[in-house]
Image (tube, rainbow over all chains, first blue to last red; front, side, top):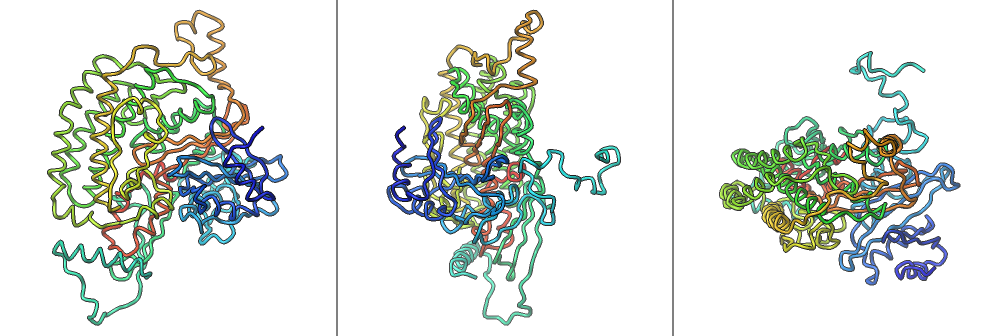
Length: 171
Length: 419
């Protein structure tokens, strides 16, 4: 299968970091190695041929069965060329960290904090890596991981304002 | 204070002096010089929900603003993983609860992209009409509350007068005013009646005059000008870098509107323009929203004229519910109905991102499917959340009172921000 021209350019520029590329439903997704995420993103942002100046979102997906469990997903847009691209990088559970792209897109600050809060992926060199949606003192783990139960782990039951009737039955 | 912030502060001060507000003389000896930390919210009426900001102040100037989010976090993304694709539609109503229709629209579009489904023409037109009516409602709500925050209370009553008419239109259309859940995967819930079309036409006839009424109250209002001109200025370059979207981005002069860039619905079949600002200040963003309401009215009018006949729901056994009378009389239809409600429909494995231009900005859904009847992962790209990321940058150097203006200029809704 032939590669998308943009994916081909990324592969040409970073032959070692390029893992795979897939085009589905008109979305182009390129997987790279996590060590190269900042150089790849810098290239996508700065190179006039690429010009992906707009950051759409940073997200993460949990695949508990896989060797590298977490997938960090970045989505960029080029306002001038009107093209979207999705960059993905796998992170293992043992070394659950990836370099931050806040130096390239300032908007990545809050997006990366959300990924850290929800999935527990750390971002190296992030200026202010704290929980953002969950409370600061929350220590039950990361809610969007697949092994986190939908009903929570019981912290909510310790709230005083919850009436006896709505409390979860003791297990 | 950075030089950048100083410059901003200087501009802002100059503007205030222009409006007749004296600028404090900095050469006078100050009695106390320590910095002050102020907690604003989460129970502040102008925070549009429950938003807390920790302000580091030097006198009345903001030197750092730290948003504290999450007071309305309900774990919608986690809930999505536990329900079928249909079951998530009512959850989207509660994201941006001011504009439920547009959230429905953005979500069903994303699922349709995942299924690679084409929607009938009439459904596309109906969707566009209702989405634009929702945009008008959203902007009217914004205008009223922004003016109220700044101190012009009258505008609120005027805009809510028109908003009420349109909410009644929604009420007649789907039985709900705010949490509508009217969009369906593959079409819409029900057809629009000729009476409703007549109502809508009647409303649009003199809508532009209504807009002139609001503008008469604001356009040359000295207080409004002083509180919005050169406040919360952001350059086009920075706005793009922060990922801002919608009127907040277009106010800085960036012509980015997904309705034009990646047309969906019936937007490419009607004539309309994208209003773009120049200065990137609160006033430009206000003016863009006013112009957008005019454009929306134009779009709705043209769509009503062109409205084609035909089905309003796709005929696809995967997603379409069987007709109710058949469910009671035909076994196959009853089984299909049962299976759709208990298991949902299966989607091909893969992942998509679909962005939609809601009235606040780009509302996107990133869906990962593993081939089952539930989303494996559903991520919501909420414009309000991403706009809050630029809050500190935009607030530095301005006065405490301007903070309220900046919440307003994003048109922030915490339900969407915290999800």
